[in-house]
Image (cartoon, rainbow, N blue to C red; front, side, top):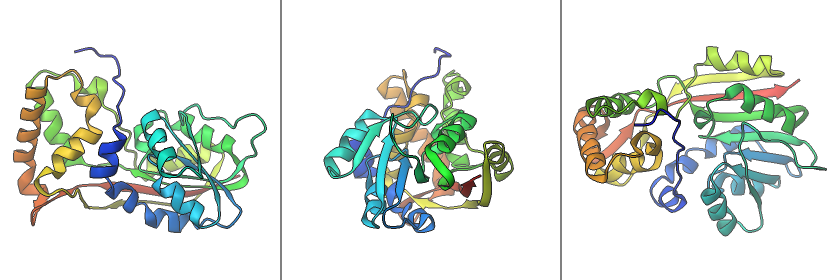
Length: 260
């Protein structure tokens, strides 16, 4: 197996049909953002655009950006009246003549970005002075049981998963100082447990693996991938399967910060 970083590939159709809980659980973060009529807000890592649409329904002008062209194509199809663009948050810059934003919003995206200082720089450059950054993403210990089961399987078949681990799950103590160093005043930061039903009954865990573990499973033949999924389910069922439903061990880091 190559030690080169393998890119996570996104399937917008699978995401909308099987992973809809991501956007549904982001509604509370929109409430925390409290978008105001006429504000310009950037949705960083917007996926297929559901939360950008909710922000726009509050009267704000919302622009969505995502690294995945497939996600952006789906967002444009669903919400043709909104503006979406493909972009890498680690390198995002305002377009020529584009005004800075009043707020940057991000739900369930920053843990895919393994250069947090670069992301924070992008957010700062996108905001006006006094603008706010409101985000929630996977924090320290997020899906720890799932990761343990999956990496045990990868160890068993000799895959160097450390070289392709796709996530960044910081603690408050790690992330808040990066914001302060990047020119933000941290107003609120919390790491909390959020057990998350995966839906789809027995298929919930497999749908999660298909959506989010692509870089870890890349290059492994389909029969072995199915074996890995079966073995993960067997290991995790006593911990995470209750009442006919998989309940993932999510831990989220929620922050609000103001650009100085």
